[in-house]
Length: 152
Image (tube, rainbow, N blue to C red; front, side, top):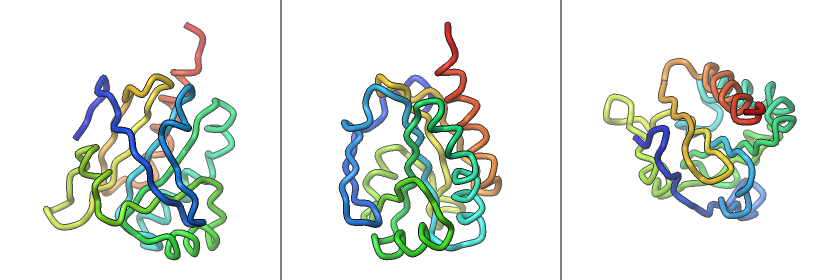
């Protein structure tokens, strides 16, 4: 898995509305990328809702938040609508972006759960991997984003 100090891979993926997200469009501000296994499962719902609940804090610090799974656009649209998720959910159907970030599988079977905080220059500042602490991802990412935004 990529770690703090590594350059984040650039990618382009489609969201639940069929719009393309390109990391090039997010340059110049922090980017939080959280990978999760599957829409509408209990752990993934808890994780996504924790990002939802902290979303205004991320925005206040100038950060963009995106979630990525292998679910298709229709699944993402339903999941986001049901839980009022204000950030984009991106479809990595072939798993290529997950692989580029080196997100490990859980028990060698399930897609892993990992969050990356990327600074305005495209460098990973924090990488957190925990399948079984889904709600911890947002809190940890927000702490890192706040440190990036703090005056030196």
